[in-house]
Image 1 (cartoon, rainbow, N blue to C red):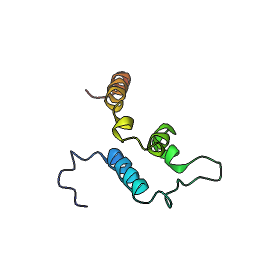
Image 2: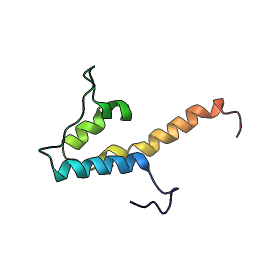
Image 3: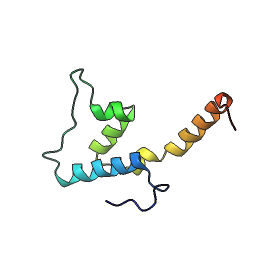
Image 4: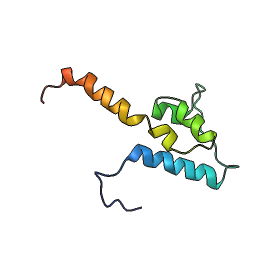
Length: 86
């Protein structure tokens, strides 16, 4: 893989697409890794277990990412009062 436009790259979304592809290519050998505490590592990385369930159900990655723009905008508004510089 060769990144030609780093500003256009969305690494988390890319990672989800890669996971979805790996899962589809060899579902018999694909498995989520679980920690000793019983929590899956992917759930820790993404902050929730919903993306894993969406991928396991065979749904497209867009089902996970479609809500992100609204969540990003809401976070930007919440953080605005705490920024030191405009």
